Image (cartoon, rainbow, N blue to C red; front, side, top):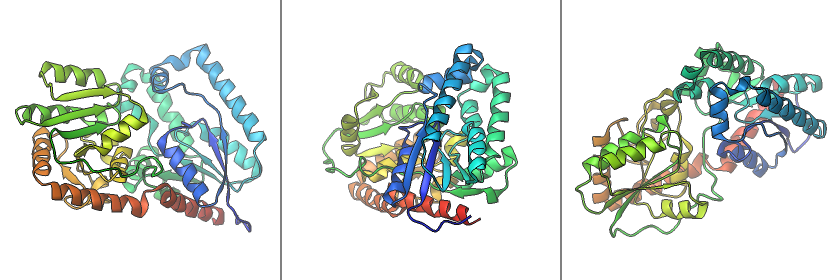
Length: 382
């Protein structure tokens, strides 16, 4: 199928997380390319806690079944109002929406594209949700497999994650295309560079998740507890939050400050004033196969970053030039890296400058939108 008109018309479809960074960047990025995007969305999930409870077995309740029925009825009504389109894109998470999307696109003879981004079954495994309900785990696996087999094309961040999904769900590599993570430069922008005066601010922001390896930060803080002038600031929340706070208290680490969720302007200032930002240090499959949003958000703000090494990271960022990479789950290595960069402000500035250039070269909404538009146009020609 080919189109003989401009702009490209996209129906962005599903119960996807409407405010999630990935969805907003791709939608905004397509619009920056002049693509006509119609959002056909219905709300199913009430937040992370709701999804966790559902994966733990609450999907069996009559209340949840009724919510699903209402959500898909609303989605159907929104779709009936949708203008004509060239291709349907299902946003993340959308593996379950692919069943409905496939029916609708076949009726209109349109191609279907799913932004997979992450395996829902793997996320549940890493959060130990599958252990709580083996029946839910089997159902989740089966539904995700079926959902992934329905679209004409599947979008993933990189080949490492694609290989995992291909092997797990018996999907050929030719079914996949790649759009990496990025950051929104309308919000994540460079600000005034902090001075080298004390305290030396080491900032982590993001989810408190097993994949992020926050124990490594605690271990490094223990090693650096007698090094005057170094203060750790941790922003965010998640299932690991209380355990990490308890660990810091048990070690009497007064130089770690926990801020929880804060307003965007507060977080923006904290990142801008950081001498160093911290990335991800976990060794779960999810951690090793992705370059997380926080990496690109740090580089978008032109701050130096220390993060755990992996094939996925080293394919796009070079150690010692764009970022400072260390072995994962190694608190001593993190402590050494902090000391090294603290002693070399010129190196910190060089990392920040080069990392920011990599971000600008291909990870802004406009750049990602251009990549995505090209992919969507090619599927129309197949």
